[in-house]
Image (cartoon, one colour):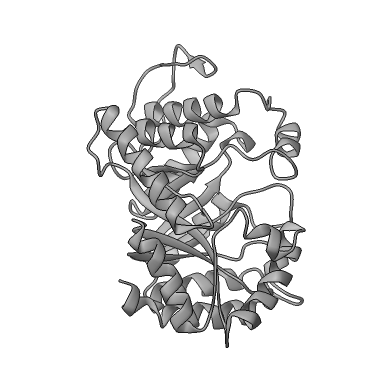
Amino acid sequence: MDIGVLLPTGQAQWGAGTDPRDLVGFATRAESLGYSSLFVNDSLISPRIEALTMLAALAPVTDQIALGTGALLPFLRRPVQAAQALASIDLLSGGRLTVAVGAGFPGRFGQPLYTLSEVPWERRFKRLDETVGLWRALWSGEGSYHGEIAHFDELPPATRPFHDGGPPIWLGGGTPAALARTGRIYDGWLPYPPDPADYATGLRAVREATVEAGRPEDAVTPALFVSVRVDRGVDEGRAVLDRYALANYGMPLAELEKIQAVVTGTPDEVAAGLRRYADAGARHVVVRLGALDMADQGEQLGAVARLLPDLR
């Protein structure tokens, strides 16, 4: 199981007096500690370092670690412009980019962003799939793309990524429709179900859809996004994660953990919680560290790193 880490690019995760340029040092330390990937998330709601800008800053200062988005919201950007930026990051990193994408959610983290981006909320999933199709057409040097929403009779020559066909593209989501679309179209699956049993059920559905689409059963990388806090015990960890959930989502932990995977406790308890997802089929785990300032983020980065040998 590969273990990656989500960079704390949001100001709510930095704490007072933090220089955001410290994120670069955080990333290089994660690489030196043996993490498999560095992921960044994407939003316009809260103050944060823009996702693709962060990855561009990391590409020349890291060597082996994979770089990823978790999840990029393509509707925030013009699709051809985004294809150019992603191909450029992939080139600058030597082909280390993975692009996990999403369409947003109803409520605070979805509809207001569409309004700000002047993109219709309706048919958002179709728009997402066609944006990915357009990216792949550009990256492959195709001269046109004809979808129901995205339609271009002539595509200009575009920046070609490091590898033919471009970086792998993953999708999140656990609805039946999302699972089917993952199997048909995408290269990986990055959900965050609170129950490992639901992860196993979803992965079976993804693999069934993959085979039905005529693709190899293992064509989709089974990944997981999970919030993690290593502490003296479960109660202590939950107390910090509750403050984290309120600062980042405006909801208590008791509500957040109904929709997102959360693992906390002693090192042994955290390792056991992550192994349950490995037993359910997860092979690339992206951990979001439950901490509210950069000092604690750094401590959590080290605490989780000490678990890596037993998790691989």
